[in-house]
Length: 502
Ligand code: NDP
Image (cartoon, rainbow, N blue to C red; front, side):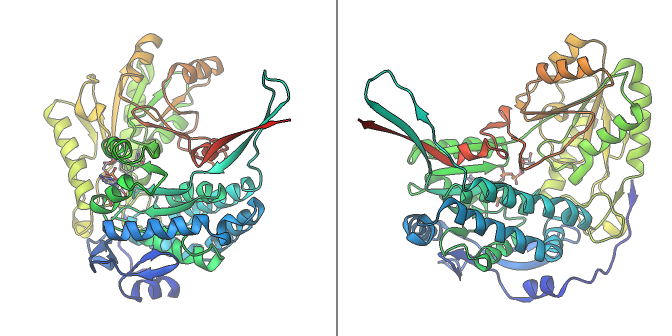
């Protein structure tokens, strides 16, 4: 691990103006308003621990106001009266504006989340744009079917209709991109929305709210409610006026959201939850590529990714070489503030997340796992921020806490395996099933692995790629429902069957 130098980065004038514009308010019914009780909270820069700006903290009364605004917008002609193609045009304009303001949005993301500016500008931003364009294309193509039935003289067809008012609750690791993952298909399908960003990273969602208005999305169609899980998120998941909640975050909160949905109005729920993904290096793999790929599978975004390939299985003959290669390359990863030149990874998003990661490392040490790289918080110039060394453990005990639980930090657990049956059994020995990876030159082995592993996405000889067109979601306790691709349209529409007696 090489600490990257700190930097005095000059922000874009637009970014500075946004920060200097005073406390950030809620977007409700097309207006920027303070929370009903005037509550605010500070959002922090994780690279320095310093406060960036105060943000309104939405309570139950604000959620209620937003639901009323979203319902009125859902029923009003300004939105319900649009054709799908017209909704698509508006989403396309949102994408154009995201491109226009990409430099500022990327800076806000780096300030609020800590990720390297390069990752925000050349990863998150283009992907968010692509989501709006992809679903702009779908908005005019939401077709039903005609159905041959066994009754004579009946004409039966289906319509795909929007759910209504949807609540979108998102985490802090890809703040703008997660908003795009959910808002783009929700709006393409004709819903109206309440978006709750994570309390750690509200800024790009708020800026996106401004962009929505500038693009001409009618008032009340998108409402932005900043605040913590309690009370803001909980008020959304329990509100009887919300028809569906789409959530990305931890499995524990996913359970709470399902319970709240069950106890309120049986609102529809889709959940994209945690992961503890197996990544497998077979001895026949291109080991140089596999080692690089495995490092990025776990350390990208400082390990704060639901798909992080944190359980690395290496076939015994390649094990020593792989561990040696991983340990050597982990030392070369440049950790530092997101605005520093050439930085590879930034800080943990918060002190809380840093402490969680340190707790897992301690648990691994105590349980006798071996650290071959990292293991410490980074001090020196970076001591004010929440920086962690990329950390690699080796172990031979899958029951360890650090092997079983989602850490959401730069911590890899590497182990050796000897044969296929053992590998499949161990790879699947987790309550999660979000993603998996394998590195091999043997095509048949690659396909067999893809079938054997219980995961919603499998990457072979690559890792962590996403596209708006490729469905993504979990098996087992990693959740249900598929975001992206045509399948995401199912999350935001319901089918109406119409019978006509001829
Ligand atoms: P959470 O699951 O708590 O947060 C995700 C979102 O849910 C945030 O907007 C959060 O609000 C909100 N939320 C929290 N509690 C409730 C509630 N009772 N009702 C409705 N919404 C709620 O994740 P954390 O940020 O606490 O991170 C904890 C762990 O979750 C991580 O260490 C990681 O393991 C996992 N995680 C997984 C993610 C994934 O992509 N699968 C993403 C993020 C985290 P707020 O943060 O404002 O309190």
